[in-house]
Length: 227
Image (cartoon, rainbow, N blue to C red; front, side, top):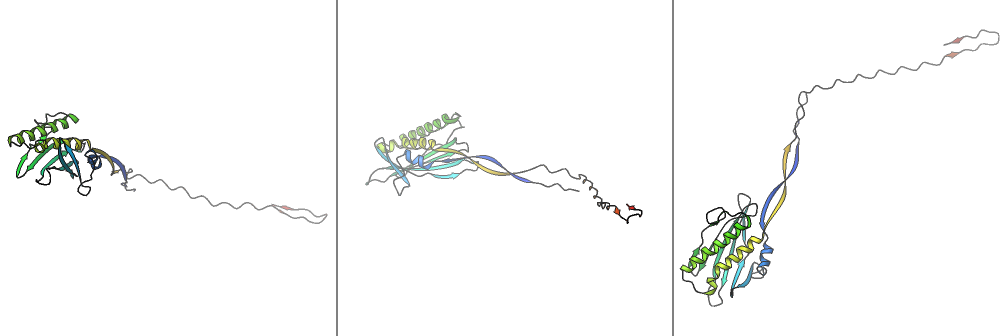
């Protein structure tokens, strides 16, 4: 009896991955040149801002969660304002949701969680959804900031700085395909197959016949030939 043998082979399958190109993101903001190459300093609408390298965390579904700190640089005699932009990206590189909050000297202004599939995001597919999320995020922050009667130019334009970072972060999203081995079993050979009958052993070779013996007798004698 021949027992079935399970043979495992490696089959290459492709798993989609997503990430953020930090170098591309930093370059779009002017380069990671501040705070020991961990932040970018730049100007928007006449005010100075600073963006730190995003903190990236993988999500359970294979996507990535990005948290970006943004500072409003108010000068030497004033304390900086701070903002945090949080963006969730799925495994296909599409933005699922975004949220931000501003900290202005003890006052905190938080946006709603803007989702692409919800009523706020409008369910617009692809790039259109990302654009809609960014616009809704900025509008929500700006309206709440207006209710706080904030008039300082750099603070008024803080939501626009958040939107600027959101747009550049979206452009830095990268999707990749990584080969991952997966074991697959081949079909086992048929069991209980009868073994082939052994071939008969060859017969031993017969010795070749010896040559006939030839006897010669003297002249006048009868010659006998023996075989």
